[in-house]
Length: 394
Image (cartoon, rainbow, N blue to C red; front, side, top):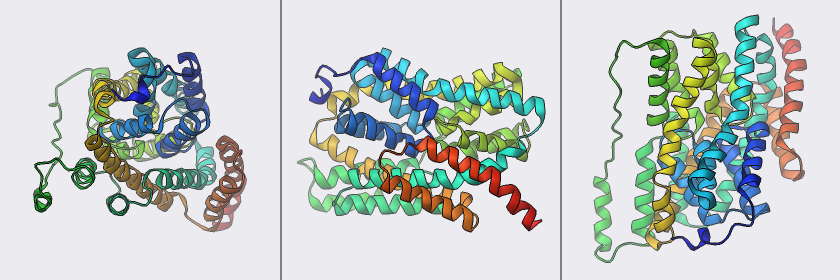
């Protein structure tokens, strides 16, 4: 077992649950920023989690399907408190933003649309880009280091993620294998065997459930379980999958409603994937929201808790560490690429570019400045500037 996990923890389960509850309530910026907050607070500032445990959790979160930030939180709860810790931490992390999107879903359904949200998102969007960019920078500096191979993996995944606007799961596995073969090759492997990497082909096998005539809630449960079970990477990766099912296939929402749902996820704290609660509410009320959230998060919980003991048992071996380093570099590269994808959609003119730049500078210079303060200021800016700009363009 990893010796870092044998030591008696210097914190209680209640303290960790309280932290995750607060992060779920005030943690803006999506999966990249949330992963960065966990590292900053739990590894660097408080020393509750070791660097090795954090990297193992990040790797497992990238390898397993489902929302990355939620899986990382669940794994960190498992490190010292096993199943109980993973369960309570996962609930504490997801619940605050779930309640928020339920409230917004109720307001949306009863008062018709969220016209003010365009103005808010106009300011919040580029601020979120700045927050994520700083988190990606810190993750890159801490995890990639000066290793040329890890930098090659990092840059490859950055470019692929930016160009395809998706995260290709088998590339993470390939990166881990490359790191393992280069840094800690097995004895039987001669250097010339590395040429066999050219034959590496690990396509994703995507199985879907047949179209059975079910009740609406059952259809919602099945669809969102597929979303949680077969979509890899960050919360942003689930958006194309959701659009195809919610808008194109089932016609539960129209285009505008779906865009509003994504906007709700971006301006509320916690995991971006919590937009499933908003969608479920619009489709079938509170029951739909609960079924959609449960269907999405239950697979990611199981995919984290079930392999966790093996990660803890074998995570300290040199070959496993090299594998983890390769996947971590790939994960951070994909995260950095997603920053560019979000920026392309959120930075639409000079004012939004200025907001993103000011956010980066503030976080760079003011180490103690809390991200929610920036998000609130950006929202106020959007509410003021967007109507003026819109009227001017009109």
